[in-house]
Length: 72
Image (tube, rainbow, N blue to C red):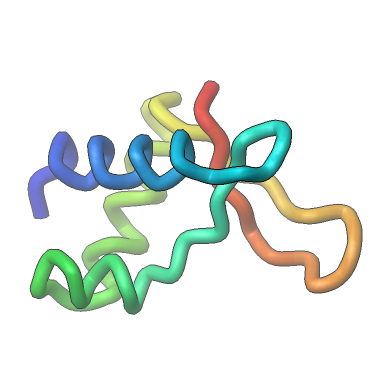
């Protein structure tokens, strides 16, 4: 899985979000289907991007308490 390609896709998903502030709930299964890889590869790629500071991961404070991703 190419991290730059994943980062570009995730950034465009977040930027196209209509929520304020801009954030996105990422479905690893859907993104994996787009790239033709396993969801586990997407999950590990997202973890690496968060660890390297390219994106931030948070959790919604109200139900449904999903993990969300934001741009730094």
